[in-house]
Length: 195
Image 1: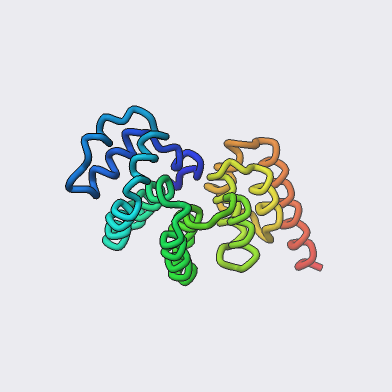
Image 2: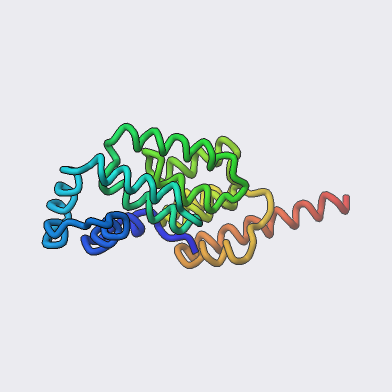
């Protein structure tokens, strides 16, 4: 299941160290002895070109979306202000928007776009990259319940049971209102068809 954006970006010092250790064969003892994230990031930025090149090489060799997401999360910790990294993210975005896998497209885009997840979901839906049910699902993943309700209520037919149950886990009353709405609309369509 897709994880919340803010949870995935809550990176610990040990996770940062593990990432740098995995890309740097000459891992510095000075980095190893570092005890705060702020100091660790500052030390990495002292050799930013070196670590960026290593990270970019790792990104180019990823085998799946899990590894790509992990690498982007870590690169965002260190290189978000680097113009070369911004250019790489633009290139990735262009490729992702041609992808027919909306979950992985969204999952990676949220790490390369400079916007809040709610705005990204809205734009992807407005530009027809994702459906209403996908927009509702992504909103639920990001715990944006109001937007999820908005997308679900705009649907012409009742959403799948799994999506409605997922929504109900956050807002039982809202799920009940949606179920009644779809049931009333179904009854109205049946009455019109019998007329």
